[in-house]
Amino acid sequence: MEDEPMSAEESLNLIAQQSRRNQREFGGGPARMLAAWAFAWIVGWGFTYLTTRSWVAVPGWVAGAIVVPVLFLGAMAYTTYASIRTGRGIRGPSRTVGAMYGYGWALAALGLMVVDIRITQFQVLSADQVSLLWSGTWLLITGVMYLAGGMVWQDKLMYGLGAWMIVSAAASVLVGYPHNFLVLTVCGGGGFLLASIVYFAREKRR
Image (cartoon, rainbow, N blue to C red; front, top):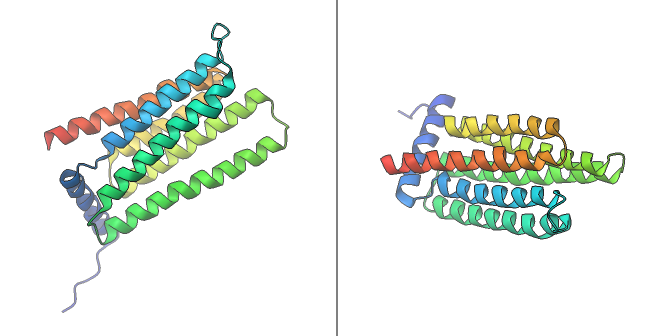
């Protein structure tokens, strides 16, 4: 007699269990990846905010063209390395879902970049408004993706991080330029840091 196909709830439970077991075996939990992103956001956006202050003699392009891209590329490289290492030896639904989630990040980032660049090219927004557009939309898409990840892996902390990022996206637009960079630093980077600490604590208890 053939086994009956699993329900959606059973499939999600299996994915979550396999993910947790793999994290324990390979040490590839989200704590280190979140720590890398916390460092990139806090240092990168914090430096960007400082360049907007009149008492800082560093031009803004240094942050936008050098510091932030280098930090973010570094965080992306580490995330890719950690994800590949964690995915070794995994088969079945966990591997498929993980790959789809990773591709989802890439597709969402590419699509949002095209949208923001195109809107910027219309030149109907001031420089301050363009800054709010980019910071708000990127915080928003980050929040939505973490919400999705939290639902897929049944991870309440990841889901909470996504919700926090969405609230931060709204806050970054409401406070206006240049304080939106401060929101990116404190709320965005701080959210990553807090989540990383909690995940580290969970790993120590296992």
